[in-house]
Image 1 (cartoon, rainbow, N blue to C red):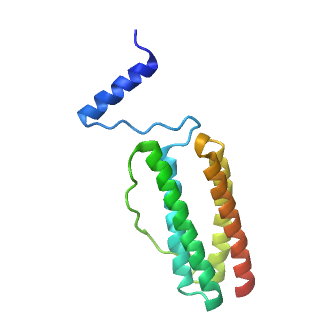
Image 2: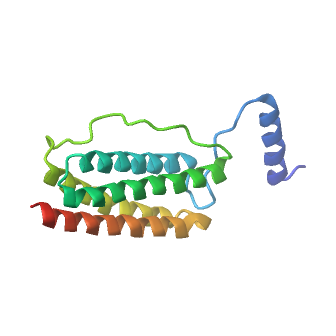
Image 3: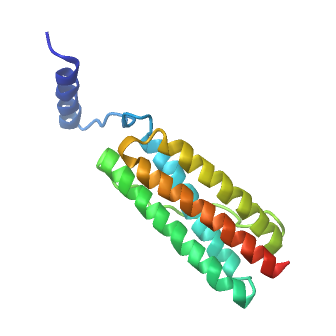
Length: 161
């Protein structure tokens, strides 16, 4: 009788040889490639949003928003690496899919929304760190960055109100 591990290895080779790719398995802690892609998309959407907000922000706020955009892009890049380690594949390119502002172009309201989303993102990364096994330090670091971003947004609001 074949062990479960050996059986899985054999089926992996059979599926690869047939051209069929099995669904990605979650990491031992429960983090799935699908979840990594979702979080990556959130980061790319955030980067796009900050870049768009910078285009209509006062000069003294613009540089901070562009810096936030770049940091969010770097987060996405790090998540792409996690996805690659988990699956052996590069994620598909992402394209923006809708309006950046749901607040009628009101910068302060957009920043207020961004503050809430950054604090929620920090909490989500900390939750994911508990499921991420070897990736836990990365997810904790991303959570700290999101918390720092929320603080930056509060400071920007102090300048624009």
